[in-house]
Image 1: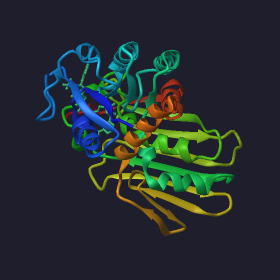
Image 2 (image 1 turned 90 degrees about the vertical axis):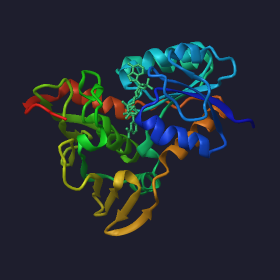
Image 3 (image 1 turned 135 degrees about the horizontal axis):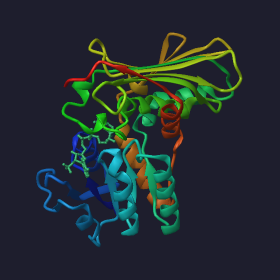
Length: 311
Ligand code: NAP
């Protein structure tokens, strides 16, 4: 089967760090164009558009990967589907659940592939944790996602705006692992969101979850003020007494202290392989579960004000 001809919308950090090298390193896709409001793009690529609509007008473009901030994704994805292109969405897939529902409906009506990517789910430890938790009951969950926003998001102002998601921008990665591995439906029962006095998005969030069964202790702590070791950890204790520890964002898994998976991350290789499979199969993969937990946290969360953020 011939490689799918893909264009990237938004030539920022993730497009440059992952999308471009992974597309170039694989054979399922060939990068034929980039649209960048700054007119930027990878060396050697001659089709760079400032307006994404001009890129969508290319007759020989099959698909797009939308790597912009989430607040503009819906309009771009809608236009891409209207132009007959398959669509890969960076996470979070849209600004709101309603926008995502609309995109799913449009993709289905047009017989095009829509793929909501959750890159952390593509780690080998995550699949193994899911397998081991099937049919189990969880009595304790601790998600700890603590990183230094100055180190990972320098100069990104959109993350502090309403609709920029703040600390949920990385936190949703932990939630995407949770929704993939957890053996029961899980709900946000309470949340405390810490907003810097000068921002419209939280710098920290503490979540308490419930399955409705009671007697469990299920929590997440997301914090962007960590200047010590960076932590992307999930610990799960089952009622049968087993402890699973997913470390480094899901790339390492230990069970009762013994490491059972330790693979270097190959998240975007997995995402592009899956996108190719979905296009070839003529189907979509739209998973709103992690996004819904974030929406619920914003809906029922208590808000506290903390000191202003300075870069
Ligand atoms: P970024 O460095 O700020 O890049 C986003 C790019 O989108 C900008 O460079 C800009 O590219 C384009 N853009 C910005 N505002 C736009 C607008 N209003 N309309 C159209 N295009 C606009 O951000 P990023 O870190 O790459 O993150 C982008 C998305 O990827 C986010 O949803 C994030 O959660 C996700 N993500 C990021 C990482 C990471 O490590 N950074 C990892 C996984 C997923 P041009 O100037 O070229 O137009």
